[in-house]
Length: 62
Image 1: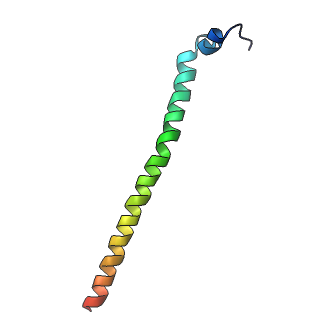
Image 2: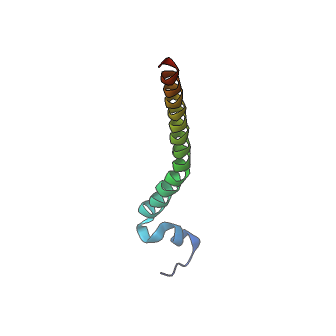
Image 3: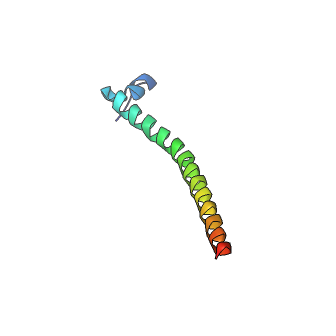
């Protein structure tokens, strides 16, 4: 496609809402995913430490 101006480019031939909305959603998800992954990792480490502590406690009782 050939656009005559930057306004025509950003209008995307009448499909701007779909095109730029798709880019926006993708960018938001790419920004949020590392934060969610970090939270899941932190939760998994806490659960693992809790499980290790429980096993050690059970070993000392027997």
